Amino acid sequence: MKFIQFKSYLTGLAAVLGLMALNATSVYAVSAAEKAKEKVIENRQYIYALEIPIKNFGTPEQKNDFNAMKDQYMVGLGYFFEGNYVNSYKELLETQKKLDKLYEKVSMDYLERTTKILQEMVKSIVEIDIEYNKESDLVRQYTTDRQAPKEKVSYDPKNFHLTYDKKVISRNMAMGFSRLGEAKKIRQEAVTIEEKKYEEGQVVDPAIYNYRLASYLSVIELCRDAKKNAFLAYQLINRNDIYTIQTEFRGNRFAKESNLLPVFDPRIPETYKVDASDALNLVHEDELKIKLNQGDKKPAAKTNTQDQPATK
Image (tube, rainbow, N blue to C red):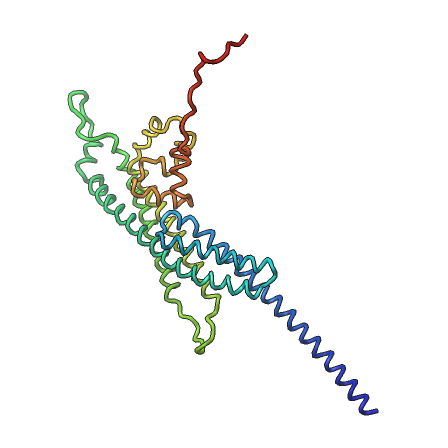
């Protein structure tokens, strides 16, 4: 009798242990699925956000690396759709590690380009401030009445706007440098972040890669905003140059003076047109081909009406 009771106890214990093992497997599967899903969402965000910066500024090596990362992301995504969450997570995590390295380089490139644009603008602002401050001889000429036509104009009246635009120009420069400074700080924190002290052989917390990528993406966006400040300053300095588009791009349906795209804007230096397009999240080469050159389409040949049959 005791043997039967003991046997029954073992049977019950085995059933309980089997149920526990089944539950443990189920929990692990859900956990792997959630982790893989999280990495799918993160990688999609960072890959899509890097597409335009790479097209605008990427070196051949960076473009090759980026394409390889997209391929690896698609492999991980394929595993995810298959329901193979463990392999999906592994592929996506490896992709994220590589993205982290590429973002680190690209964010540095953005800082360098933005710094160059702002520093060149500062030189222009200093010259404008010297020439158009309230005590300058030029401003006194602007504000002094003259006897026309006896007295000739000794200055270019087209530049008078700089006497009041210079304040807005300076504010944009201040904002641009402020954003640049914030971008540098964020990047430095991402680069030098202290990883938790793991014992040798343990894996670094994957959350660190996501944190760094989010930081580098913020750096890129801040640099874009800082560039926008610089380009607004250029647009104010070269305010009168905008009128040339009325004849130069006549007939181009994309050239709208009320919302002028960088490829058409003569107020922005040609050297920085790609930066201006990128700041609006546009691919500069596409802007040139599709909008400026309108797809490189040749105008349709005119039909010779003499060869057409007469209509009644």
